[in-house]
Image (cartoon, rainbow, N blue to C red; front, top):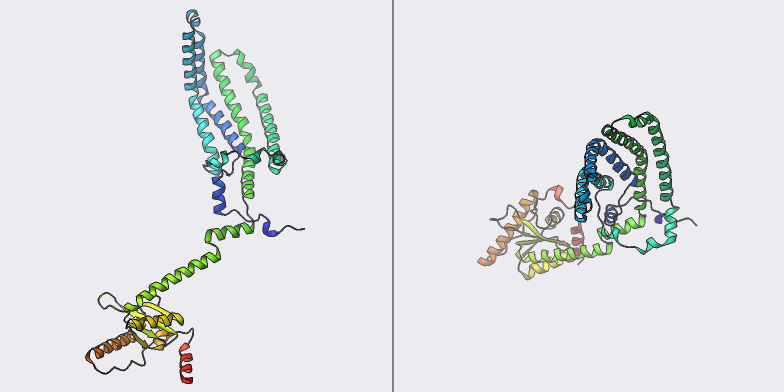
Length: 391
C-alpha cells in the first residue's frame, strides 16, 4: 500500500522548527572539519613556535637533570623542583594550547553557529536501546562514517609514505648534525610533515561538510501536515481567529454606538443606511464620521439618535456616498463638503426655529453628489421607495 504523500517529509524546515532544533542542540557539525582544523593548527603552531619551544624545553630538561645529590635526597626539594619544572613546561606550551583552544571553539561555530543546549546534555533512555543503536550503526550515517575512516586511513598512509620517502636522506643525516641543530631540524621536519599529513584531510572535510549540512536538513524536513499544524499554531486556528474578529467587531461597534449621542446629525437612506456626523468648527477642518452602519446597525444608530435628540435627516444619495467612501473617525471627502454643509445648515435652522418657536424649515433637496462618490454597490434606496409605494 502506497504511503500517504501528506506524511512524507518533503517540506523544508520552517524557521520555528530550526529554532526549536537549535534549542535542543541539533545543529550541523562535522567531526572531520574539526579534526582537520585542529591538526593543521597544531602543525602551524609547531612550525611557528616549534624551534623556540624545543630550545626552552631543552634548557628546562638540562635544569631538571642537574639536581645536586644532596637535594635529590630531600623530599621537599624534589617536590618543589618538580612543581617548578611542571609550571615552566605549561608556560612554554601555553601558546600552542591556547591556539588549539581557539580553533576548537571557532571551527564548529563556523559551520553551525554557537550553540549551548542543556537539553542535549540531558540523559535519554532511548540512547541505551540496542535496537536503535544497531539501526544507527547500519544506517546511511554509519556507512558514511565507515567510508570516512577508510578514506582517512588511506590518504594519511599514502601521504605519510610519500613524505618518508622524500625525506629519507634528511632523516638519515640527522645523526651527523650537532645536538642543538638536530633538534631544531627535527622540529622543522615534524612540523612540515605534520602539516602535509593534515592537509590531506582537507579532501575528507570538503566531502563531509556538505554531507552533514544535507543530512541535517533532511532530518529536520517536515510533512505537509506538520507545516499546516505549525501555521495554525503560529497564526491561530480559524475558529479562534474568527472569535477574536467577532470580539473586535463587537468592541468597535460598542465604541461607535457610544459616539452617536455626541453627533450633530444622522443621515439616513432612510432605513438601510445610517451615517452619524460630528463637526466642531473650532477643532475640526471638516465633519467626521463617528458611526455608520447598514440594516440592523443602521436601525440601532437611528434609535440611539432619537433617544438622545440627535437630528435625523433622510438624504439617500448622500447617505450612500458617505457610507461607501468614508471610514469611522475619518473626515468626509472634499467632494461632499457642500452637500454636508447644506445638511448641517438645515439642522442648525431646525434648532433655531425650535428655540424661536418658528415654523420648521424645509429639508434640502438636490444635494450635489459627485458621480465618483455615488455608491455603485447597491442602490437600496429604490427598494425602499418601492416598499413605501406599496404601503
